[in-house]
Length: 371
Image 1: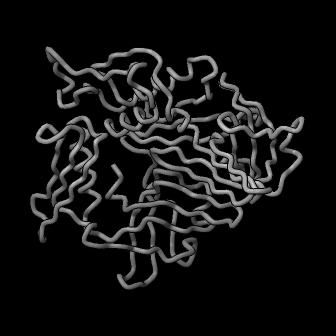
Image 2 (image 1 turned 180 degrees about the vertical axis):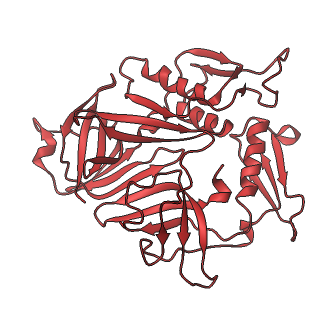
Image 3 (image 1 turned 30 degrees about the vertical axis):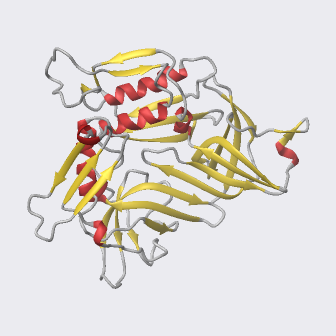
C-alpha cells in the first residue's frame, strides 16, 4: 500500500487549488465517523523546502485542505484547523469538512413549522454555500428525506393542523452554530450521515460528498469476516459492569424544576433486579428528543458485555475500503473468560494509522445502536 498526502487551498467558490501533492506527513491518523466530523492528525519533521513559497509556509489554518490517498483512493481528509510548533516539528490537526459549520451563524431569518429535519439540515449547507467565499463544494448523496414533523414542537401529530404551534426558528440574532443545529436535526429525525472524498475521472478535482442515511447508514455485511487470529489482531476486550444495565432510564432536559423536560423509558418485564439510570442533558429541548434519548439509553444498557475497539489488519476477508462506517459486521473471537463470542457490531468510526499499517474500528453491539 502506497500512501501519499495532498494539500489544497480551499478557494471559497466550491473549487480548490493544489498546493502540494506529496506532503511529507508522519505519525498520521485518519478518522472516519458516523454523525461526526472525523479528520486527520499528523506531524511534519523536519522542515521541508517544498512547503514554503517565497519564504512563507504554504499550509494555512482555516483555508487548507489535507487529504490522505492510498493506491489512488482518498481515504480521509479535513480542513487544517491547528498548527502546533515544537522546534523543527509541526503538529497538524485537521477537522473533517462537516466541521466547517462549527461556529457558523445563520445570516438570515427563517421560520419553519412543518417540515422534514433532513431537508432542513441540507438547507443549512445550501444557505452557507450560497454566500460568497463560503462554498466548500459539498455535494449530497443517499437519503433525500426522513419524516415530516412540526420541528419546533414534535409532540403534535404532523397530520393535524393546529391553531397554534411553536415554530423552529433560524435567525441571525440567535443561531450562531450551524453544526450544532445540524446534529440536533439528525437526532430529531433521526438520520445518520458521513462525509467522503473521491477523485473525479481524470483526478483533477476532489469531490466532497455528504451522504445521508435514513434511518441509518450502511448495511449488515454477511460478505465480510472478522475473526481473531485471522484479521483481528488483538483479542477484543468485552466489558460489563453494573452500570451497563438499566431497566428504567429517566432523561432530564432543558428547563428548571417541575418545568424541566422529562422522559422515561422502562422495561415492563426485566426479569431481574431493577436499576435506574438518570441522564441530564440541557441541550434536549423537545419531548420527542427526550423520549428518543431515553429509549436509546435503555437500549444501550442491556447488561450484555460490549466492546468499543477492534484492531484489524489487511486481509482478503475484509480489505480496507470493503467496509464503511455505519456497516454491521460479525466478530468471531477465540476462547476467553466468557467463552467464544460471535457478535454483530456496528462500525461507528474507523481510525487508520498508515505509518504502522494498523486500523482500529470504533464499534458497539449492533442491537444497541443500529436502527
